[in-house]
Image (cartoon, rainbow, N blue to C red; front, top):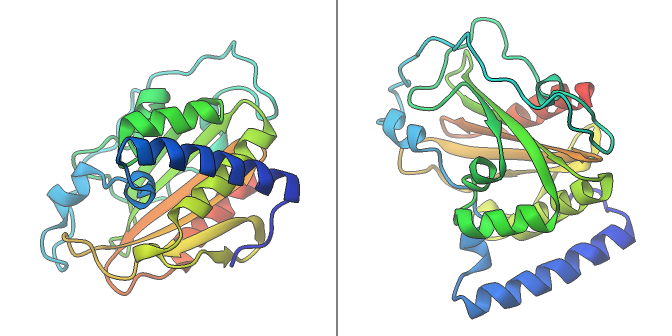
Length: 236
């Protein structure tokens, strides 16, 4: 189990979970389905047989810019300064952007139900975010996502909520991420239809929440997303 969070924050998370579960029950949504991370379409397109690696594409050189005038609670300025660089020599995903600014709509698209994902992000006062994708030398499909919230308590509460809502089922119990006391990791118990097995590490540094997803050939190793999360926290 991940290290305990401050009691006040945990209490706030529990209250929020109860409230949203009631809403979802009324709408006939299940919490496990709702909070399961949505697969990128490109994973299904590129997966194929486990022995077949995805096709590489060139990385983009022309990227849009963020809003330099917006003021943030703790981590200020261009969101890209708070996400790790791609390692040298890696490949790009096929069918998905290598670099992507996240607004409310695109951030919510990573939830099983984007409409309800939008509601959750609004509940925790989401501001903006960024995603970076690559295929590493071991053919692992890595996605690093940073989400910025309006305050450190919002980021902490979202992380607690993410961990609490995703545990159980195919994800099992959250595991600690060595070296980060505000983080937890998961590995799905079996491969997906495309042959990859998903692993996740998530943690917060105040108003910034970092989520690392690594889809690996079985058997997935939690150390892969954990290592990327550690690198990410060096920036935060």
